[in-house]
Length: 247
Image (cartoon, helix red, strand yellow):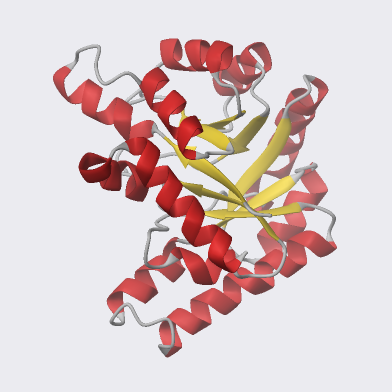
């Protein structure tokens, strides 16, 4: 069975565009849950551009599924995670000028600091995942620093799929899909959970969901976009149905 984590950041993006109180991510989490979400994902960024501290506090109190807190590997964020205690924390790279996360975390380049941060969170009872590229060097480093899961960055696959006629049989899409699959195999061989996410949508998700051993898919923008037309509960239900067709 593959679990679906729904990222509700962009509900907060809409709220922050007017600097008001609606739509409330708390309601979005409830609707996603009713649609079948297995986890709720939010990214508390350093600049608080969408999700803010109040959201995380209230979601921790109310989410009835798993709460996955995406965060930069900073002392501030590790401290917040250890206080809030989400079921899972996913460490991601973060840049102030990026629109969204643009690549995987450089684990190999900061092993000592990440090992310390991960140990702090694991001691607090938090399951720790790292968002990384499908790079053997990064996967091996993730195991060394104590990560329990790796979320493979599926952006390169999604972009190749889109740019080559939305044809999964294209050489470019197949090459990127193979990289994700090989990364997943390496992750599992090292005793970690294989998750995946980024830029997945209703037309490209099934080949990723069909990969051996994938445990969780984390999807946000596509689901929130679909929700504008069909509602969030239905948008989640449709995504989960697509995943279940091939899982």
